[in-house]
Image (tube, rainbow, N blue to C red):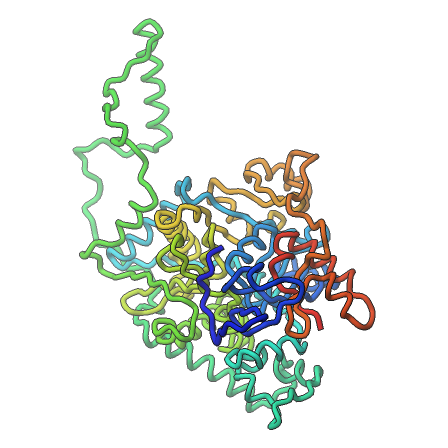
Amino acid sequence: MPSAYRLRHARPLAGWFVTGLFTLPVCGKKPQDMATGGSHSIVEYLGGDDGHRCGYCKNKKGNFSHGMWSHVMTVQDYQDLIDRGWRRSGKYVYKPAMNKTCCPQYTIRCHALNFHPSKTHKKILKRMKKFLSNGELPLGQPQDACGGVFEEIRDFLKPLSSSVQRTVTIAAGISYSFFSGEPMEKMLEEDGSVPPVDPAIVQRSEVEPPVGHSSPEESRDGKAAVLDASKAAAAECPLAGKGSRIPPKAGVGADPSRPPCRKAKDIRKARRLQKEHQKQEHGGVATTLNPAPSNPTYNQAKGLEEFISDLLPDDLLHNLEVRLVPVSFEDPGFLASYKQSAALFARYQMATHGDSPFECEEGQFKRFLCDSPLEAETPPDGPNVGYGSFHQQYWLDGCLIAVGVIDILPRCVSSVYLYYHPDFAGLSLGTYSALREIAFTRQLHKQSPKLAYYYLGFYIHSCPKMRYKGQYRPSDLLCPETYTWVPIERCIPWLDTSPYARLAEDNQAGDAVALRNLGKTLVLHRRAIMPYTTYIQKRKGPTDEKEVQQYASLVGQTCAERILLYRA
């Protein structure tokens, strides 16, 4: 893997290994034996034995998943993790317990290079063109496809007051606390020591305080702040609120000199009868009145890029611009649009999912959609924009109306979340943005040939509103036992029978990178990197082998030997 990661405060020291965050001594391995000059992913495993409320079927204790907090992660490690059924929300990375959870979630990917838009997709693209051409905004209800994601993730996130969080941030000197968003040096005592943390106070005051614990004045102020931001966003977008359909111009009726319109079904039936009649007249050999031209491209179906390019003429009434900005508070484009993006997120969550102002305040927005563990990378064989987390922004006449959060990884573009202005729900922006992201994946493939897939997140067959992801064909689902890809057409019959199914047809097949040697699992202990075999010799107290075994089995042997698992 290319070692072109963005390193901060990196200094080569003899006998020490330098990561993207801080300098670590290496036990058991020489620095040159590891990824010289590169970063290590650092995670803290949180387990997954407790049931939580399901955001899809609303089962109060039926949602089971394994989770870990990612302090930093390389794009290659995350690519390998999502190919084993993991998924991130902010810096929280989770994997559904497929054979235990109420609504099994299967990782789904679309073959972007072979994708052809369906009739429904073409209608949505034409609808957008019609709107941009004459301003006709169709009426529509907000799409609720992602309704369960935020609701279910909130239940997983618990106060993380472990010492690794303090160790990482103190050593880096620049990272921010997950709880308050302030630099960690502001949270230290005068002598540099870490103040004691009362988990009860943290949970009550900083993570998700119940509404009853805040004063009426604070509640009203918080609500007013979010509503004011939403009003400001609406004021900047003159088209918002104009969801009524423009009255059609008066016409003169049907042209009597032309034949009456017929249904396409009737036309096809007439053509078939005509061909059969011609076949009988010519001794069983079918002929056509208008033979197809020799040029094979004459009658080709219109491609995705052609539909999108139709939205670019200069004579359109409205201008739609798509901008890609890296998720970084050091990027001018991201900073310039941050307030507008946060206000749009709040408006979307309250209108579409019925969230309270507290649930979609700026801190929540930053935590889930701006804080990413992925380290940006720009290798020579990668795409021009590099790898990492991005916001794909949709600007209509200078107004931000939608944002698609995506991760660009070595083999795919991974969709994270989409939020949009509710007044434009009639344009089916969820589907439209997915089509644009597929086209974007094709564009990146020309620069980096190994990048060829578009990941749509999780496909949940037991939840009808989440089945729409299977409409982007050709697509595959990830087998939860072998971690191999299976065409979705072959999976549907199994899932119609049971919510959970082993999708791989070969009963003898297994996990190719299953855990085989727990001792090689890399551990971060007292700011030193070491294999697990060395760690257990240094450890004092009860054994943690069962927890480490569970973690390593879930991430697989390859990732277990690369990712650093924090141990106190």
